[in-house]
Image (cartoon, rainbow, N blue to C red; front, side, top):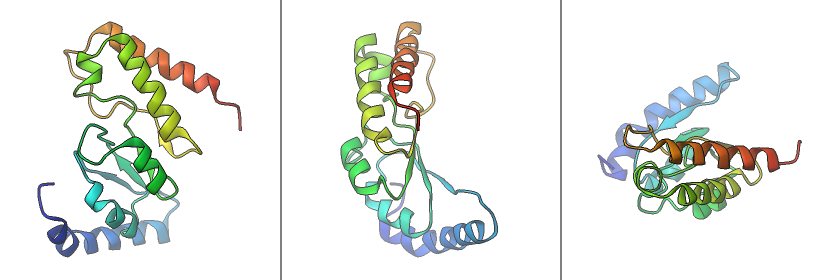
Length: 149
């Protein structure tokens, strides 16, 4: 975090709460909160301030374990991202590593809904075509394996 949780709560949370309350009261929109890194210490605050969607879901950051996040916040937040780690697995793993992580994260975050598949963050130029294809193919396999609602 760039600022302490206490400072976030003092300076930013009331501002976001007002915006999110207005949006929810006056529109059918959902609010999207973008914050990179480990935000686990602020997730209760994000929920309390009315955020609907968390992006990115930086699964390699401290405390951002997919199982924990889904268990604790799966009914409260939509997870946008977290499909595959863009700092380790996607650029440096094998295609098999990528496919395995995609399947694990889709299974975890997708359970019961509330997941928008996306890589954790921007895909960098050093990612091999093979790993990109492995990501897309693994997601397609997961997507087609889910029964129609």
